[in-house]
Picture 1 (cartoon, rainbow, N blue to C red):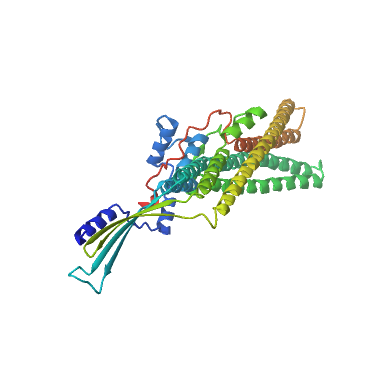
Picture 2: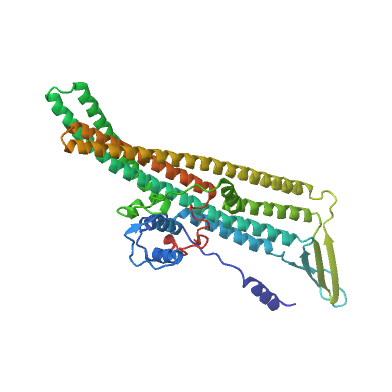
Length: 470
């Protein structure tokens, strides 16, 4: 074999090698790209239409319901980008697991200082080492990598649900603060009228100063509570933007659907709720996949007890004499039989099984607690609605008496105030019921009353060309 042939062989081997492409991160550009995100993005519109299965005629929508905002979060939220990247790493590990060991080539020239009879002073030796894996080790590696890849894929669904949960909580906080602000303004207005009426009566000597002072304190307390509600509203808007993966300026001025939290849903039967959660929760399914990976890892360590074989054919040109050889080598399992790694793999399998049992027990406890909490919250809401209805009927009666001249304005204002306070109590009970429903949905990892999983593809990156890479 001459030098040109060796050069050609080396070139052929190197032609399929990957090359490094630098892709630096520039914090200033990524920050600017984030700040430029908006809700009128035409690519977002395509993503929404693809998942909704219908055309959006008015863009951007005049009102945003929960489903539109949830899909927007799936489009922009960076936590899903991380989960997809982790899945891509797991997919790459499958390639690594399936690789066969490369043979090695050796070249050992020798020069003899003494030759006789005109023989060449050179001896050229060529040898190959061909490794052969035994006991199905490659298959076990592939099985383990496949199970870990499935776990990584299911983790995307787990992250997507967490994003949905954060968005729902943020929207509920925003809705609650907005409704409370409206009701508190009405209460404040009534209390202001009540203070004016009491001051007029104080001037006439019909009420005492402490009565007026108490009304003034209540008015000041209502003003403080209104300010606090406005602060909560501003913070909730930031949390909604964070869950969407958008700057807060992108959601300023958007209008939420008025019935975004208007549904009254009966709780599912406990037995069916547990069954659905234990069969469909993505974190449970991911842990099952991890357990299968631990089983494949144990099989791999057991298979490593059996040594691989190395074939070593060789050729030597020894001063004009052609010599051929066939080598064979195998590791002698004398000092150890891979007992340590086998024991570690068995322990990891037991650990994964224990984690699975613990997760199942925790999920069952979450569901039972969420069901009880939701039923109690619904009962409280019904009681609050009954109280509000009673206060409305009383207000109507007092209003009729006032119109007939049989009662005074102070009594009418007191009835209106009681109605406004009852409306606030009812609103608080409604928000608590919605929070309890959210806790129940999180325990089930399933929206209610929907029976089937959300038909949303969260695995495919909706933005293959990220803003910071443009």
